Image (tube, rainbow, N blue to C red; front, side, top):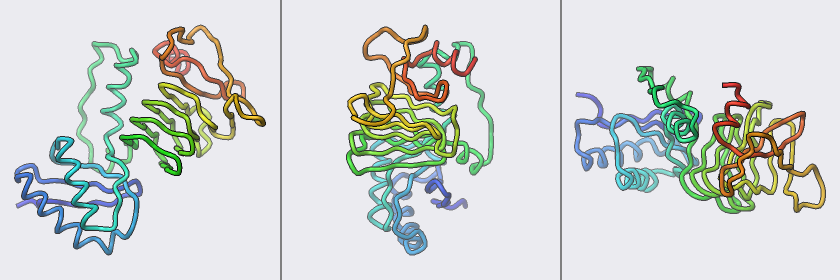
Length: 246
């Protein structure tokens, strides 16, 4: 019989593999026992959680997180989703993925899929809260003043960006920072830095009025490097086609 619960630790967080043939209540008992046994090994850490093997509702996911935190010294900071699933839906929503371009299902090993994932954080980041990842980061909420987001890839804020964002932290000058409302204290992309237009000193974040700048108030905005400087413009299908030459 397959194990009820398997825990796999990675540099980005924890992969929790659940046996789909067992009841949720039985899985909860096994999760409790597993994390009690592994508590000393896992230590006191803030980690992301990727759940595999069984589709859980939001309520069930919340209960799993509560069990983990009650039976270990871990703090689960976010639930991680596959980048491929998010990226397909995101491109379709932005008009990049044509209707006839249906996503292709590919069977790959678990670790390979996880290594190609993005960090997805659900909720608002408040002052003093920081998240960082070697992967691209998606925040499904607001980034408040005093909060920081750092990624070696790109950053997507599905809310307001009022804090600090550092994309391309490993030197990737093609990284971007997108937000539904982009009014940061400071943004960095690779070695370029821009600050709020209201700040007294430093290079200001400038609006680039190009042909793909959205004229509709409330549309998403994006910051990127152009001619060595960080500029921002409207974010949408036309920007993506121009920027990525697709």
